[in-house]
Image (tube, rainbow, N blue to C red; front, side, top):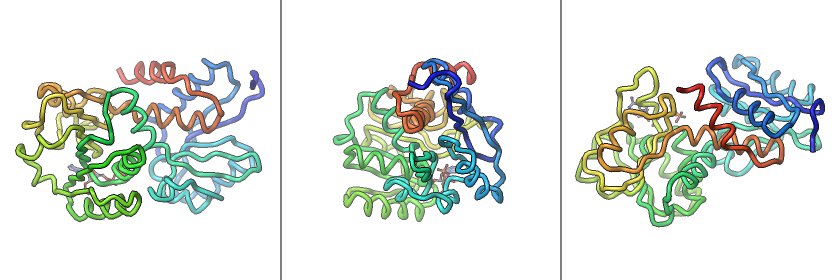
Amino acid sequence: MIGQGQGKLFGLMAHPVHHSLSPLMHNAAYKALGIGHQYQAFDIAPEQLGKAIAAIRTLGIGGVNVSIPHKEKVIEFLDEIDDEAKVIGAVNTIVRQEDGRLKGYNTDGEGYVRSLLAETKVELPTASILLLGAGGAAKGIGIYLLKMGAQKITIANRTLAKAEELQKQLEAYSGSPHIHTLSLEELDETKLGEFTLIIHTTPTGMWPNIEQVPLSLKGIRPATIVSDIVYNPLHTAFLKQAESEGAIIHEGLGMFLYQGALAFERFTGLEAPIEVMKKEVVEQLQ
Ligand code: ATR
């Protein structure tokens, strides 16, 4: 057990960092468990990233989360990255190992799927999944959906070529040929009834554009699970629309919380106090 005064320093490297809720969330967790660690936000300009990673080694920092715009670029400064982070091509968590080596992970997709499984009764092996968007977030989520047993995924994106590129990457990862693609335009009411789980991964509807939705949900079947990774606002216009169509909704805060919880567990070796972390973040967002 690590006592007060024997803590390590952890942190977040991003640019900008002033809106991040990660310091509050991690520090609340340390406090609740009586651990003397501290978590601090570091605003790192892109050209300083190499020096910032060197500072982790020099100062003996226990680990950091990495956010926009550093998630891809940071890989070249690390000693090792885990297999999923390698496939995703992005790292959001760096852990300093016992021997001082820096290892990179990506907890975003895993955090998303953990939160989906914890908060909904979805059965991934039988779900017919619609993934809206084909960017970095969709890739991380898609990989973990497949890893956790998903069999049937359709990717719909504004730019069809990007959906097809993601399709190839997911098929190469899983060996599964059951990934389909569509452009957002092609996705009309007649097709929506095929899906039992709809996951929105684009920034549409994020504050301040809170009235925007990625598509109309008219035509979904009752009790479809509709999930949005946008968490500011907590209850997006897309989720409101989903509720009015009789869907079961899954809010985006879960992904943020569980990626943080997984980072916490890698940093400390302890189980994350998820309810404490959630309370802290929800208070800030309301
Ligand atoms: P991230 O890495 O955070 O997922 P990204 O790589 O920029 O971000 O990907 C953003 C995703 O949101 C893409 O799928 C993008 O569609 P395009 O591939 O057509 O660019 C999608 N996206 C962004 N803004 C959008 C909008 N206004 N309407 C529909 N899709 C949008």
